Image (cartoon, rainbow, N blue to C red; front, top):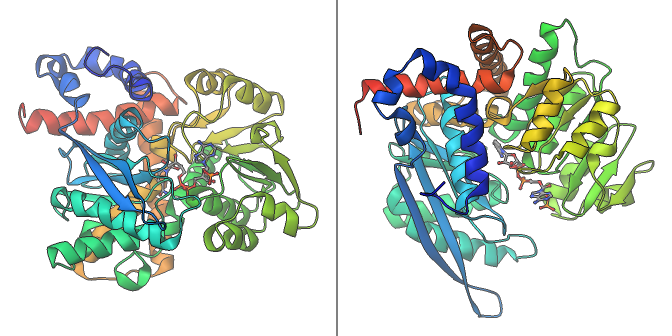
Amino acid sequence: QARSPHEPEFHQAVHEVLHSISPVIEQHPEYCDLGVLERLVEPERQIMFRVPWADDSGKLQVNRGYRIQFSSVLGPYKGGLRFHPSVNLSIIKFLGFEQIFKNALTGQGIGGAKGGSDFDPHGKSEAEVMRFCQSFMSELYRHLGEHTDVPAGDIGVGGREIGYLFGMYRKITNRHESGMFTGKGTGWGGAEVRTEATGYGAVFFAQEMLAVHNESLDGKRVVVSGSGNVAIYAIEKAQQLGATAVTASDSSGYVVDDAGIDVALLRQIKEVERARIVEYANRRPGARFVEGGRVWEVPGDIAVPSATQNELSIDDAEALIANGVRAVSEGANMPCLPDAAAAFQKAGVLFAPGKAANAGGVATSALEMSQNASRQRWTFGDSENKLREIMADIHDAAFQAAERYDVAGDYVAGANIAGFERVATAMVAQGAI
Ligand code: NDP
């Protein structure tokens, strides 16, 4: 904490991982002797930079850009870019730290990183977003490359922003280097299912947890927060698997639609019109909007928090438990506060932490990198089957690690242990660097 003061989210993420892996350290004292933990909590490289851009009135605006290259021990740095006013060093470091273990869990050769800016794309014109992205990339490009560091999207960075960022990289470097960014449009190097992968994956993970207890998603009521990339496709997959997803939200409030969210309408409002969630209730008979409300007060069998970190408090967890929630699968990164996560586990609710449940996005990004490198294109069906397989493998890795260390059923400990074991083994093998 002394070395990284004022970084509460980063400390929260580190604390959770270190707590989980203490039994591994007891069995492997060499990890301490070789400084594995000390090295792991210190990013290999932290980049912070000025992003100047002109708004539509011609006034100069300045934002701050970040890229935290946390660990390249398993492969090139890999992790998304987030554009949101709440972005600061602590947020990006927590996300980059989590990314190391998440990426390790996918079984693919990708290291951990995260980046972004405190720029807020909401309410900006197309031209302003493009100028911002171009300025951002005019600095970051020198740190990226298909063998070095491969960014992707996250909050506030979707297909539109990725297009502008990739275009600027191509112009500055004079290279059409497909594998230097993932989440690209499917017409210019993007992989099928990448857009859907995080949301689909979080639902596949819930399905795997339920299957251990001979239960399924069929007929279940699902409560989802957010209405962005992860939330939309979690809702879609839950409905395809026979459940009814009844909510979606944004920072203004939430909507409830007992008939099941109409995904086409939600996509039109959020992906095309970029409007607020109240529009959904305005246009969908039977749906209602609750301004400023907490979506977790809506009863459901399964909860998929898919908006942002620390969005689900202990009060929310208690409300969900009182309403009989059976499983929680974190679509977002660290959406549940630590006491909320603990309350779920104590109540016997199946609880999947984000670093396992939402790893489908980055796993599919790694598949995009493979397809770019070999100049292949897989079909939607093949890609979705591969994603399903990867999510089952991640589930099994976390489940079995928990059993090995006598914490059966604890997916938080299991995911942290399984990810850490792979990273620590590689760090020891590659020496003290
Ligand atoms: P989007 O920008 O597409 O959507 C984010 C959604 O969450 C929006 O509905 C947004 O509402 C809401 N939201 C964001 N911040 C807040 C806040 N402070 N309070 C309330 N609502 C908020 O992002 P994604 O769907 O891509 O990402 C969602 C989560 O999933 C993040 O935690 C991200 O790190 C994680 N994730 C994403 C992956 C991906 O592939 N996209 C991969 C793995 C994890 P509003 O528009 O009002 O801000």
